[in-house]
Every structure is written in structure tokens, then in C-alpha cells.
Length: 397
Image (cartoon, rainbow, N blue to C red; front, top):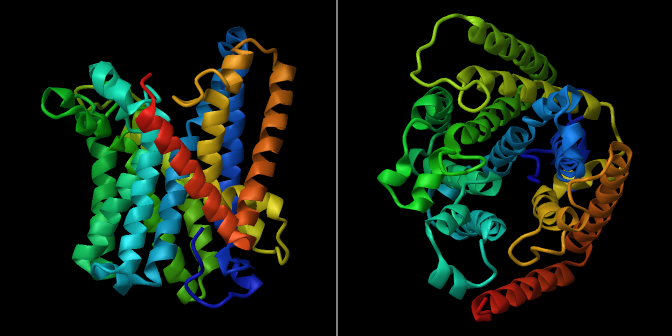
């Protein structure tokens, strides 16, 4: 999570400062998103198919349509907070920009790891087909975040001034929102290689393509920038009030516009490509952000259990996917394969509670190592990477 751009604000401003000057409400927001994501993924992985077909579970899935947009929106929130205080350092190539680019490339590589069809580079090269290539390069949340943040750094690098940068981001957010139905009508695989084609739409299985999902990341950037400007003017409370109001307006507008008998797109799918659904989800994220701010404004002490998921969101995101669904490195040793999709509701809820506690413990240990025992933290990172690369490049199958 990014540090505060200024000194610790008073509690009355609505922002409680954490150690190392972190914004508490953003950590709370991201922790809530992670908890919500864990609940949805665990139940979807193990519940019986009969329960998953019930209307109540379908309503549950409707709310869980916010998980990925919320994760991306949170990445946009932290981008501005971590970038604005060193704005000039990112206008030219140097150590700060190089470090940031390396981190973002690592995020993209993590996405590729989660998509690996085989745990062997030789098998991928020798036995690879169009289908395995499409699987490897499908655009998922980490890919979307990595590419979106790289694009934002490109804008910072070339446009220099904040006014120009945010003007372009506003235009890009609107473009992604309204062009998504058109982009989804194009089969990019007919014109481009799979690693490019998979970025733009879900025609060939990408779960979270840039259209529309990178739009939520860009929207988070805009909200975060406006928040920091409001903080400088001592108007944070007014900004959050307006943010929640606009959230309600966006939700109402999306519902109202969708009810109109007018259709301007040749192909219109409310749940996947609709600009109206984009507005509804964006409005809900604004309300969630405002709610996190109101929760944080009166707190002077912070229970780490409430914020650690937010601080280590990347770690818990990757870990829970590998443990729950498996990967090319552990296709059999994962929760879904061992237990199957056959548990009744109470057992599934119990498993969710146990799984969340395990993730929480692992995340607390990881955060402790990073903040208190950094040499061990780095050693584990390097050792894990070395072991993975050794087997990935030496295995024949």
C-alpha cells in the first residue's frame, strides 16, 4: 500500500494515519474486497451444483460481480497516492521508474504463472497448440492491473503535467466504457497473435479483458486524485459526501438508461459489455469507498486483522488461487480437486471460515517478515523463484 503524500492528518479530516503514513480507509476497502472475494471463490468452488443453481445463489453471484472491478479500482486508488508525491521522478528514466516498471512486469509474470497450461517450458513449446497459447495469454486481473498501470506510467512520462495526465485518463475511462460493446464484436485473433488478441475481449476465454475492466482501474485513479486535492484543501469530508452521492446517481442512471427502449450498439449484453452496467458497478465502488472512509474516520487504533489483507492484497490473491484452484505446479493438490464441488451449505461455510483463517495467518506472517525480518522475506522470495524456475526449465513433462 502506498504512503501518504503529506503529514499525518487529524482524525477530524476523515483519514486516520497508519504507521508509515498509510491511508486506513484504503486498507479497509481492500481488505473488505479480499474477504468478499475469498467468500465467493470458496463457495463457488465447493458448493453443490444444485445450490449454485438456486435464485438466492444467483443473487449472491450478482454481488460478486463487483470483486474484480473492486480489485482494479483499488489498484487505481493506490497508484495516485504512491506516484503523486514523486511525480517528477517518473518523467525520466531513473531508479524510481525502473523499480516501478520491474514491479509491474513481475505482476504480469504472476498472471502468466497462474495461466500456465503445463509446468514445463519444453512441453509448452513442443506440445503447445492454439488452445494452450490462448490459455497462457488470457487476460486476468493481474494482467489487467499490470498493463493498465504500465499505460498510466507511460502517460505520466510523456504528458508531465497533472492536468494533461488526468484529462487523458478521463477520456480513456469514458472510451473504455462506451467502446466495450464494439470491441467485443471483433475477433482479434484473426488479425493479431494470441498474446495481443486475448487482451481486448473474452471471445477466446479471457476472464477480465482490458475492455471493460481497465476502465475501473482508471476510474480509481480519478477518484484518488480528487481525494488528494480535497485533502490539500481540507475538504475530505465534503469530497466523500459528494462521492457517495455520485455513486447513487451512477447506479440510478445505469438502471434508468438500461430501461430505455433505445439501443445504439449492434450487439448488447448487459452483464458483459453494457456501459450501463459499468456505471452501476462504478457507482457501487464509490459507495464502498465512501463507506470505508466513514468507518476509518473515528479510529485512532488499528487492529492489524482488519487491514493486513489490504496491505498484502497481491500475496493473498495469488496464494488463495493456487491453494483453492491449483496451478500447473499443483494440479492435484488443491482444495477444489481434493474436495470437489459436492459440499452442502453448512460445510461449505465452515470451509470458507477455515480457509479464510489460514489465508489470514499466512498473510500476517508474510507481512511480519516484510516489515520486521526483511532479509528472510527476500530470501523466501528468491528461493521460491529459483526453485520454480529450475523445475519449470528442466522438467520434460
